[in-house]
Image 1 (cartoon, rainbow, N blue to C red):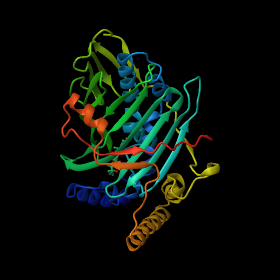
Image 2 (spheres, rainbow, N blue to C red):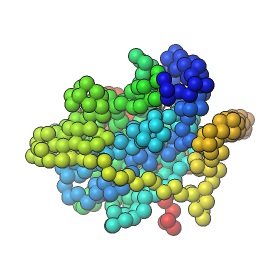
Image 3 (cartoon, rainbow, N blue to C red):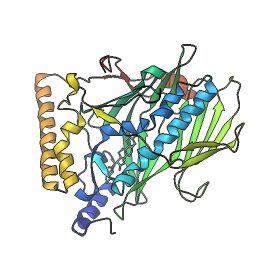
Image 4 (cartoon, rainbow, N blue to C red):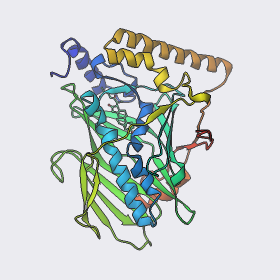
Length: 382
Ligand code: 0T9
């Protein structure tokens, strides 16, 4: 295809062959230069908040039904950034930089028009397999999102199938002072367009948003299914057993607009992400606002510059330096009988919030591990 530079065609073909015959950790495979992105996966959690006012609005609702609808609207509004933004900014889906253990990313969205400041913190909590943990908090609105994600990949019918592992928990302080919790699961991805060297993501199957009052089931389809169009979804929001309230049904395209197609608001507009988004402001996490050696934009700066400038020799030399340095660290730890200490998160084998809420959507298995967020952040000075 035209998307693959002539000089990289054979390396693209052999890359595809190796994906097809291999299932496991794709992020560690070496890919041809044209498909490399200069951005690390530790920056991806910022997609959860590129419309900070929608996140903030969750804290302004006065009853469980309006909150559940506002949570759903925020969630759907994040999908365009999460799954189509590399196509918009770089022409296709690209292979992100594979974070090192302990890699960090700090950022914020400033307070504007009374929405409050939202803080972002990301830490790579595992390298093999890659697992990224994050916390996003709007303190003044009483909203906090904590989650982690990993992927299991396989190859089928010419596409990469990505099962997302991990979940997020959204905590919302209600006007009565209670903390309302939502478990958020993640959709499955199919990466198509590989043969032509212009990969793009389609979402598939089902994800859930579950609180003790409402269960939301979101179904995803691509071209040729319920609306016939790419990036279609249908969401059904139902009161939990024993909770009085009405069902809401919403249908549309997650990268543009959707409408209520059933329930008390039938016919009304639901979400619209055709307008502008707001990128995160990256911050240095060290005292004085400096960026430390493990902060993603500093750690990868020379690799990223090489990729951006088309200087792949520098990119690959600098990438090898980082990888060798990591291998040496692991050897030193093994020799000293120590292990890497996480900075902001603690791993637990079973998340009590997931155990309590997942049965409402009959999720199997009903338990999942989690990385709990140590509350000592952000520093009060910020
Ligand atoms: C969490 C998101 C995730 C991360 C990425 C599969 C993928 C790594 C994980 C799931 C975010 O909230 C949402 C969006 C995109 C996902 C990435 C897309 C992608 O291709 C990569 C994988 C590891 C590859 O790089 C595959 C090889 C590549 C040549 C295809 C473009």
